[in-house]
Length: 96
Ligand SMILES: [Zn+2]
Image (cartoon, rainbow, N blue to C red; front, side, top):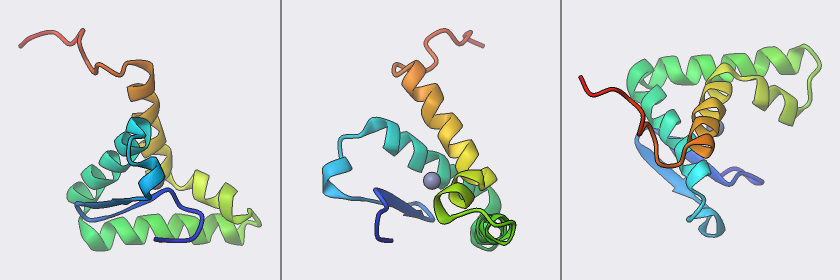
């Protein structure tokens, strides 16, 4: 796991540092990455992820700022925010 990271997702495998194991918001963030990996495939995921990171670094952003600007990270954070706002998850969804 990268130094300073709470968790990392490679494909459908989510590795989480022990002290974050009960952090449901974090797990929700990582679950979104699992979905992204599945949707994009390994090559596209890595290309988009690393491509965006390198792009923002070249624009002069520091590591943390560049990381937070990666669209796949923004998407995962949005999923985690939705979870934090409604931990029960989608209870109001209409039944179809
Ligand atoms: Zn992430």
